[in-house]
Length: 123
Image: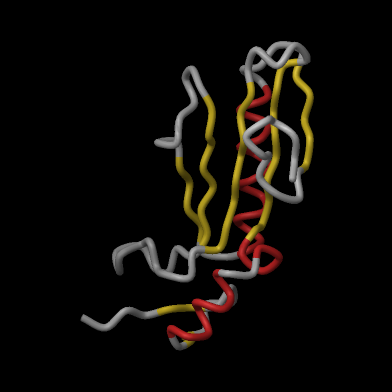
């Protein structure tokens, strides 16, 4: 089975190029936002990334970007939205941050450059 890789603009690329781009957080990451309560009793991370593969599985056109919410409570890594373009992904990321923030009392929203380390501090 042939795997079709695509860059952020939906242009086909080879596997070696895809592997290189997937290893580049600056290229791959569209947004990473922490939404937490001031007392940190609730902490969620909204992550939007370029996937490189079509996650529309040929049924919805190319879906190359994905937003997921990681956290506890009603949000879980099962919460996922996919998009065809980087612009849609950026808009979807912001909308998802708003949805999550609406569920967190006294929220603090922080844009992150990288995933937090295990001690909770951004690395």
